[in-house]
Every structure is written in C-alpha cells, then in structure tokens.
Amino acid sequence: MSFRVEFRVLAPWWCAPPRRRLGAMKTRAPHALAAVAAAGAVVAVVVPAFAQDQPATRIEAHAVASPSRAGTPAHPRGLAISATARLTTAPDLEPPIVTGIDILVGRGLVWNRGRFATCSKATLDRRGPAGCPKGSIMGAATATGRADTVPASLRVTFANGGPDITYAYAVLDNPARVRETLTLRTTRPATGPWGESESVAIPRSLQLVAGVPLNLNNIRFTVGGKSYAKDYIVSTRCPKGGWRYQVTAHYLYDSTGATAGDQTNGAIACS
Image (cartoon, rainbow, N blue to C red; front, side, top):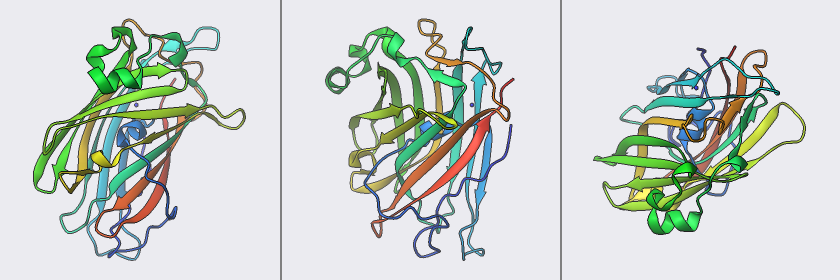
C-alpha cells in the first residue's frame, strides 16, 4: 500500500503560513505510519507558500497491498499492507512534530478486528507485547530519525484491541528509554464514500524526548496477512480508481508552540 499525489508538509513559521491552516487544536497524533498504511505508492514534494526560494520538504513513500486483487462481498479476500516512507527536510527548516493523524478509508477494505484475539492496554503497559496472546499481534513497524543530533529508533508492535481499537506499542531506546501504548480509535460512517475513520494520538513523551523534539523520518511497516489472522484486513471490491483514502496530519512547531495541519487524498491500486 502507482500513482502521484501532493502531500503538503508545512514550512516553519518564519518561512510562511500554512497553505491550509486547521487552526489551534488539541494534541493528537501520528503516526505517519497510519497515513502511509492507507496510501499506495506516493511521491510528494512541497514548496512552502510565499517562500518559493526556500528548499522543499519532500516525502517519498511506497506501499503495497498483497494481494491487490480484490475479493467480493460473498468471498472477501484477506490481504497484508506493507509500506516504507521517508521524510526529508532541508537543514535550515524546522521539521514539524507530527502530533496527530486522522484517516478516512474508502469502502472496499474492511478490518475484522472483532473476529480475532485481543490484548488490553493494561497488559501492554505492564508487560508489553510478550504478555499478549500471539493471535492478537497484527503487525510491526520501525521508524528512525533524530532527536536534535542524536540518532533515534522507534519500534512499534500493533495489537488487536477489539472491534473499534488497535493498540500501537512503541519502544524508544535512544536518546532516552520510552515505552508507550498508543490507541488507534475507529468509527464507521453510515453513509458517504468512507468506510472507516481512524484517529491516533501520540503522547508528549514521544514528541519531546530528553527535552528535544523527536523527528522520525524513515518508516517501514507491515500490517495484516498473519497466518493465524489472514482475514484481519480483507477486500470486498475494487472501486473505480482504487481503494481511496484521506489523511489529515496535525503539526506542532516546538520553537513557537504553533499548531497547524494539512490533508492529502489518494488511492491504493487494485484489480
């Protein structure tokens, strides 16, 4: 989870105001991981508004659904989604801290969270993924970047939390030891083009680490397709134009405390 879309990453406050400002908002969070999960192959280049002489911020990502051939409502087809992503910010630009991701997923893809073993947040907080039933682990991710000049690496395990919940257990060892359980919450619109809406929040401990902003710029993950949960994610049809998605990202600029946001739309190729 090939096509080309625009994904605007906002320039810092001294370069320009955001092109599509969402205004002040509560701290919420990313997962740039969840965003890429909904995307097909993406290459995005952004030049900040009113600052065309400034270097661009660039996001490159590639994601695949396997298999990409869709099932039917009578015979859904299980699939796995794998993705990689890279965020590059020019040295003289302040990288934004991603504080929130809201995702809309088009009809044709279904998450069967209620059919499989679950793990609780309390268990993850106490014992980590090792304390969960094996059948509740649905994927994993790694993300690398920096906290100021210090290399940082984040490991994430996705655990099924029930019909409307997925947990992301995040482990950061450098520049400080952090263990956090993030909660992805799902709602299902009754009408319209979207089949699912998901939101995830990143705690402050994964925005600022050892007192400095955490900027993760390389991500790799796989969700679904487990031998014990092949139907965790299924396709029921291939809509014209592919499996659609919409991602709204929320940002914080640590030097000013300013918040902003932007949005991107795309589709996963299917047949």
